[in-house]
Image (tube, rainbow, N blue to C red; front, top):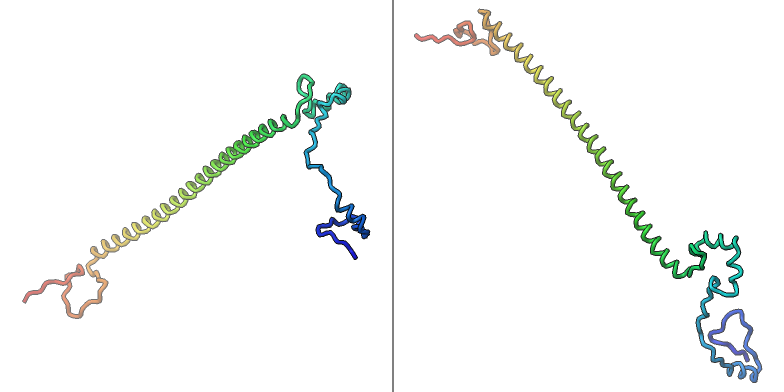
Length: 182
C-alpha cells in the first residue's frame, strides 16, 4: 500500500510505509508563524564600528555615498528615497531640455524649408515672367511686321486682298469694292 500526498513537493523523501510512523508524521504540528526578519543595518552596528574608522574604508564609503560630510553613516534606505526623487527631477529636466532643443531644431528646419520654398517660388515666378516677356516681345514684333506689311500694301496701287477676287467686280484699288450706281 502506497501513501501519496496530494500536494507533495517534488524532491522530498517518500512518505513512510509504516503506519505507526505515518501517524506520527501526520500528528506533527508546529506553532511557528511567518514573521519578517528584523532589518539589519551594518552601518549602525556597534560591533562593526572598528571597521568604519579605517581611513581606507572610510574614503571608499564616502565616495560611495554611505558617509555624510562629517563622516557619520547615512541611512541608505532613507537617503535612497531622496535620491530617487532627485533623479526623477533631473531626468524630467533633461527631458524638458531635450524637447526644447528638438523644438528649436525643428523650428530651424522649418525656417530653412520655408526659405527654400520661397526661393523656388521666386525662381518659378521669374521664369514665368521671362516666358511672358518673350511671348509679348514676339507678339509685338509680329504685330509690327504685320503693320509694316499692311502699310506697304496700302502704298502699293495693286493691292490684293486675302479673299479671292470675284470676276467682274469693280475694285477701287484699296481692297474695297467701289460703289457703282447706275
